[in-house]
Length: 444
Image (cartoon, rainbow, N blue to C red; front, top):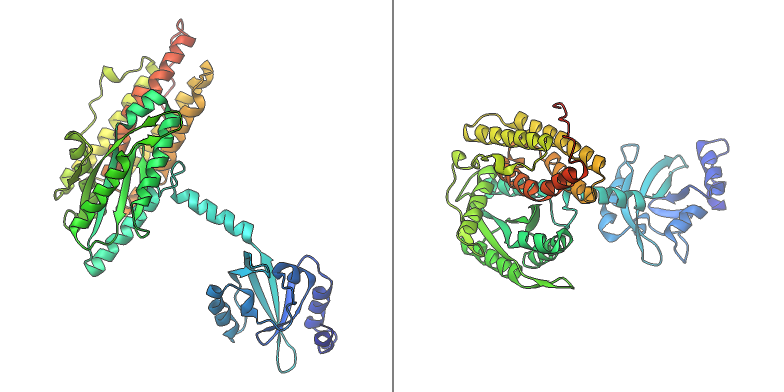
């Protein structure tokens, strides 16, 4: 280092930087001539931890092989300022980390010095990666969520338009899952979903995408097909894996699986119609006893809208405020179904469904607080999961999500929630205050 400093003219920016390099224990700074390190301060040395020192080491050798071409391209840039980069580096003990490198060229006779500022950004990089993972994965199973699945589906549709290569969508729903939830509780149901998710992944290729769409409904994207028969083979393998007994520790349970298959472009040319075709085939499998695979038929836009909900007194839980809000939610879902059937704009209706659902959940949670409801945490988690799922969708962008499939999911979720969790809540509210009629809150 002393040799390098001796060549730096007094009073120059390089001299001031050299003083900083010499004395800093916090900022990792190295100097290079050409493409080789000629000096590393203590912080730089600790960052890369090379037993033999860093003097004479090529800059590219600080990074993992996959990142070396990037650093070579940056260093070849003779247009002025060198751009920073984040790359994977390794220490002398072969452990890897994410490093951010910034560069400053310093005048130094015929051959300029290059100052290298290095910072370990592993924690920041991993935190950002984790946030991205959470945004696109189902928190219970770790599978892709609706947002990631529809994005992969969009990419497959674009590839099909370019190449004509067909792809398939499989919709799967578990048979007998509700009975497990009712008999053994939601914790056992969650464990079943996690085990089934692992089995589905084991039965697919790395290039395939498996997603949990909500409840016990899954979707699979097969982005490449040698023949239509391959889709049947995969669907039958997945249903076979699903029906194998599940040892949950204290007891063994068994579920089945129904599946619907649709192929693009054979059954539909758009994402919405394709998902609806696969979903229609799934429901045909369920109507015919379940535990089977059914192929889709060609779908038209008018075929995609689910039938409207028939809402009546049988769905009331006995708390006026909750019952009136349930009826309003059912009316909004039916309004969305009507818009889909008639080819009308639906984005505004969907936004109102999200807004009113949030308002309704806030009402239920307020009532839970008034009676110190024991099931508050579980009930609140159901609310949060649904809202997170809905808010991740972007209906205004057309093919990013199947509106019809989402509507069917919301219809079923509302019916299940009313018949299960909301009836339990209503019973607790009545028991806590039998003599006082619960007041009706104003509309949001």
